[in-house]
Length: 392
Image (cartoon, rainbow, N blue to C red; front, side):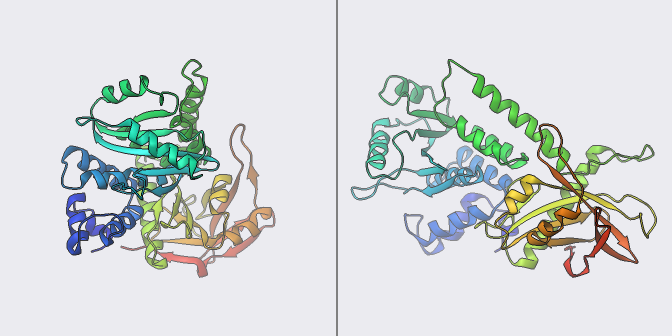
């Protein structure tokens, strides 16, 4: 059963399928298969499975939700260490540790507040992790809670020694943050989201306002830079909404086709950025409509923005590509990251106010073959060797 077939199944059915040879326990094959599966599915599927666990609880749904929340942490660009399903005298029972740079968060997942939550037990785990050097002394505890208003848990925290080290967030809110991060343009937004999950001084709220403003502005830039943003002729009857929908579908088709070619499952990380679950294969996919109705020089043009955030995402470079899609063609063109870096000096660039620099990439038809046109050097780079046929 492949990933597409799993889209027709509930998470309960999927766990049962993985668990045919054994129960969902720490270190089991079922656990390994489940966690690997979650790393390979789209954000929308993560959201769907979380909601199923919360709305239609089943045997071990709390353990599955724990893995889902940790996968959300990865989608928020944290380096996540999965905890154990069940603690023991020899093994701490924390649910997950999320790290980014020099900061860590101890995450506890709770399906509901219907049952008492022992914050002292979590506090002991937290203290031991600090003593063992696995997290820093300023690492907070974050409760990710599903059903309920969380008032009982909040009252416990307010009246405890953990008031300044513990925070609570609903899983629905975590899902929203995951989606904001995915649709954003820059990598900085993930860092700002990380700030929300840590204890915040609510006396001064400028930081929260800054985070909300940055997310809103970033989303707008993302939409502009990841789609066809060139001037539309006055006789163009196609609405912007329809055009954006076509671009999104084309990008998804390109991702699926390149996944098939490389025999790797590509996951969307940002609006235009994809990688396999390990992050070893990285791809930026941009799509343009056609400019010019006739074939030949200066016609049949496609225009793209190659942006600084794309460069940073692809920078490891060993197995990274920029893929140029054409909205009206059943093929695309993939260029290795190293090639794009070679060509940058021959391409015009723009540095908008308060936005990252981007380079102008232009594809054009030359004697029946598509080429990358380098504006400054006035050279055409043939792309036939980089042609990607799209799956039907």
